[in-house]
Image 1 (cartoon, one colour):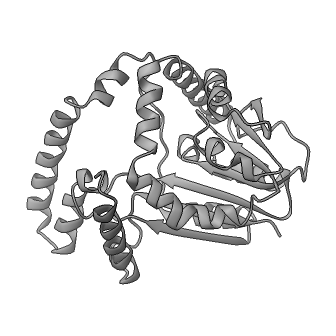
Image 2 (image 1 turned 90 degrees about the vertical axis):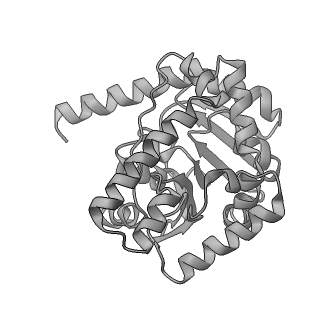
Length: 288
């Protein structure tokens, strides 16, 4: 890797740290994050898709959560572990997580996932919940996770993907002519920006220094290709939650509505419709 690439990665990592240090000093923003992650959509997403994989690999196990943020996962699962290390590049995020988790099984470490400050074969499970997309060098993260995992240990990730809005889905499904599709997509993007400015979350984030996050979203096949190229053999990648309706339906408070939307989304993927597209990707790697 060139000196330039290394310097750019260090710059991006430092930018992330500053952003989240500032973000976790804001009471409004942290409350909004908690509210967002406690929506029925995330509750159902976790309980039906991610937690079944996770719970098989954490009971009385030593778990590392890389990029733990404010401790969303730790608050839900640390009591089931032998002990759980919550690690983040943001010191303020760790302080927030410590207040939130309040569990004797939870430990806290300040560090970044490109250079994990742990010995080899230290953990049964390495967890990465909605953090991997902030890192450009996914291969290095995977290598570090494999290094600190015990044999047969699991590296589990739950990651957002680049948005594939419902308007794009229907335009592509019905094979609308490209020129018209581009025109309609541009209108949709402009309307989205206008509506976003009316949301409380947007207005709170505007007050936060360094609020422009760095993202490196990837498709499921791209994650798998990177991992396999770097010697990871046992890799499973699953796409969940195709956004075929406006987001307000996914974020409904009505669990019955959300469950039906998720079932229909799952059906689309089973029929191999937009199989590379979804709101989230679940990655499961086993160290062999």
